Length: 116
Image 1: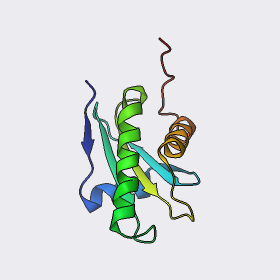
Image 2 (image 1 turned 90 degrees about the horizontal axis):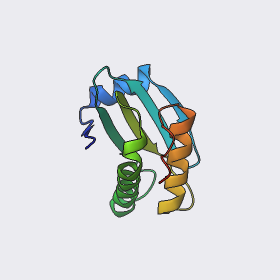
Image 3 (image 1 turned 45 degrees about the vertical axis):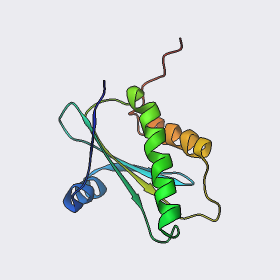
Image 4 (image 1 turned 30 degrees about the vertical axis):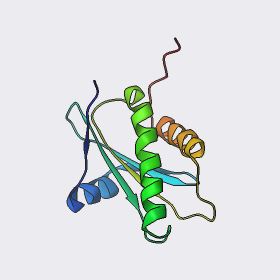
């Protein structure tokens, strides 16, 4: 089983923001940085501009669940930070999934899915 460790400390997030690569989508900005260990570390941030806590937590859960579903196809050894952007409409599950795959492929850390 693949294990992803959460990023919790502010300095860990700042290191990814300053030294990492990023790509911007409609709903999400994705930052990645190689961490030289064989596990991925995940951070999710949602600004207060997105909405009240209920909406922010809902989007955070959607991002986390979509990450869990594609986790086995992501290369190992990266710090990954998803920053949810404020937008007029609240993205749904499949919109986040589509954009997440697109951004991961753009940053070249998504391995092709195996077709059964």
